[in-house]
Length: 92
Image (tube, rainbow, N blue to C red; front, side, top):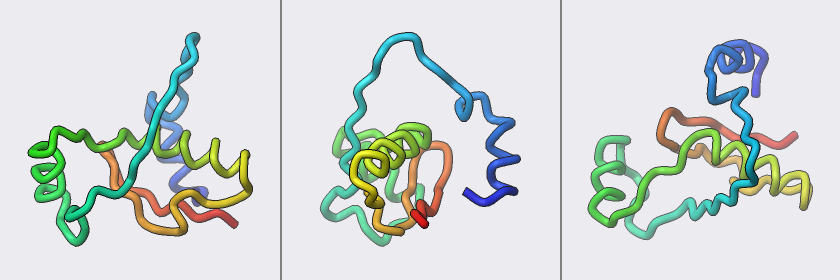
């Protein structure tokens, strides 16, 4: 995350959110046939399949957990679209 993005994200309550109970999330980032769409078309496509878009904070948590466990970037430098925004996850 670049410094300007960090400053902007710090204003978002979900960026600093915590929980008192453990949570388990599962991210399956690719749905066959869902590539090359704009956001509106992708949301319609996923809704028709009964699949929600992942929340941005869940994608960030998945990235961090995978990186800490393996030292690898789970998203392989791809732009990842989520409910609430789009980020380019880059591991340096």
